[in-house]
Length: 84
Length: 231
Image (tube, rainbow over all chains, first blue to last red; front, side, top):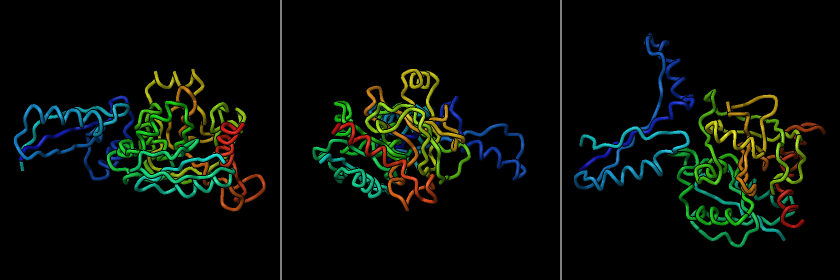
């Protein structure tokens, strides 16, 4: 079974309230030194057969049309992932 | 009688309140179903609030691909009055009927409050019974209510008078330019985060000048569309 990984992140210029909240929580655990955190999404799309160029093209289309909203997010990665 | 459609998606919460608001305003509410592309000949459409498809992926993201939305997008292009409330507003931005998007409130919390707004555009079919500068109070309840858009889009919205409602006295979620509601270029599609349908009948709405729960400022959204359609 093949797997495609799609990573989506909030646009750099966009505020990321969730990432900020995580960043504020880290020092409470004694984890210091991280000046900022941004939180995104990872999707894993599986196919029956191998990951072909055609599969990757379909995943890129899915990433651009449904998995991300280009107003607030960027697709930062579409690539073959490690099978489980 | 003027017929106003109210769409139900899986997870919609406020469809019955929206239908009731339509009825109290003097129109006939018509139930519309997400899986049906038939708008049943309605004269206007309301996309109510809730958590359509559980807000999975992003609020409104999956509703955009419901069969009924194909018909709504087509009818909106022909000038059909469309009002998106809260989750309905999120569906309209995901459908590209309105620009920008909503992200999580800047304070990260779900917020429910009686929210003061200023009316900034009284020329849309949903605001014709208001006057620019009117201060109104209707409920606001959401977690993903922070309106965001790039600087160019904001400048365009401001320049073209397409900011329809702005938060008054307090910005409850970090929305850019205090924006609570906007319209499309033609003005027939309006979206806002606060809930007019919860402020249409004395005894059930926010506090008003006549006392607790007397606020009915939301009713004018629905009478406006009647004024527009019937004259």
